[in-house]
Image 1 (cartoon, rainbow, N blue to C red):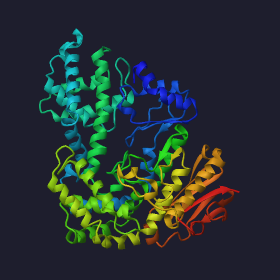
Image 2: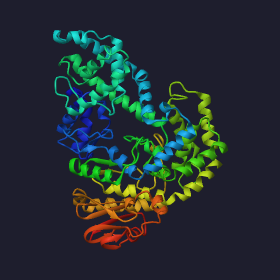
Image 3: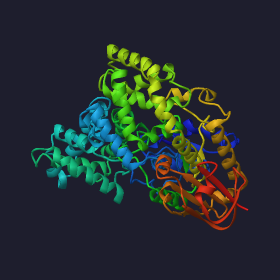
Image 4: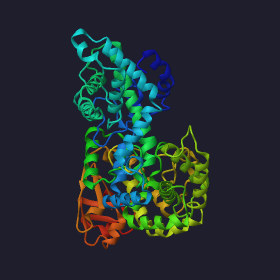
Length: 579
């Protein structure tokens, strides 16, 4: 893509569709795989005359999209993480993690501890799938050392290939984000410099001999473009960053997320399963930053890449509100429905719980392929390239006879008690997604209840996932229609200000509310089971902005401080507009 002729040839059709008005905007898939993402995006921005463009940039927990990228923002996985986390109970998630460790007894680096699991997965990927890329970087580093200027040769030429290889691998597996954006011959910037320095500091601890650890500095400086501006330095910078992004995608999304499974709703693209919950304050801070810096960014709840659709994740997240009941249920199911191993049992039952909804046991034709993909991606007992046929047959038989059989009846009772909490999360996440800062991406079929597992399950015909007739699906459809219709009628409200609204009273922590553009207010209930256990809203009140407000779904009229028990009497969410 950095070659102008290649760019022109590969983008001719896209640019023609834009010019003809067939396409309104662009979504750039995985820009971190490019040699020069910023340069590519500048060229695209110029070629499209600044057309609305979002990038599939997977941001780390404390990472921000580079401010100088000429794009509207991301495709929305950062919003997904905040929305999911808002409806996850932090204490319950911690208790569920402890129960998972006790039930599975998996070692820390094979699913028991998130950092250790992610690190081990990274070592595996870098020595298997990415071994050729690593060797190419080592050869380039050797050339950089052997051709270094005389004034630096004494520092660089003493490093053996094995030491450079070890330093390279130890730095790569310690990068907490997808990649740096340094380039040869220019200041790498404070963010990339700090990122590589921290990774290098930790990488030095892998060397027993201090003198040999000096190879780490060479790799760090080469990755930051500090060793001149020659072809080898330019090549190392670009390929190091591309390898880092591939490593992160393969080791975290495609491996560690399948090995670490306390709460499957948290093992999602862009997620942090070691700290899945997000406070109301954190959510408001995120939204305020979007409104200030990236008001036209993309936001999303379900995509072709999500491992579970938003509505499946909503059901699984509800388990964070009843960790003890889930742990006790799993202990009973261990005997009633024996599995090939306890990790598979935990994963299979959570997936089944998320997929089944109120239709009884899930379809084995959908759940079995998803579980086989899970165990192959985890690569602990079987893999895509070296499948263990006997183990996979045992997994298939267990899923068919257990989670997809009569044993699911044991789960149905718990599912029934969680129905109000699932309803609140499903409708709450939908409302906040459609009204928060940004441009909401509504994946096919998700205007109704949409129960889908990992690709290819989520490529099925949308009508197969649910119905718009009555129940929660009908509620979700009406809410989606109302919110999107309001965005169309009054776009200035949704492009305007973002004002957090605070509730006061015993149930305050269960309310998340904000005003947009002075004309619309969104109110959602979070962690509804805990609210129910605390005897409901009581006298908890929400102070609405001045004026009279009409609730779009019920037609009710409200002013000033309003009791949430009254405002949310008909349902867990409210969408109000200024009369």
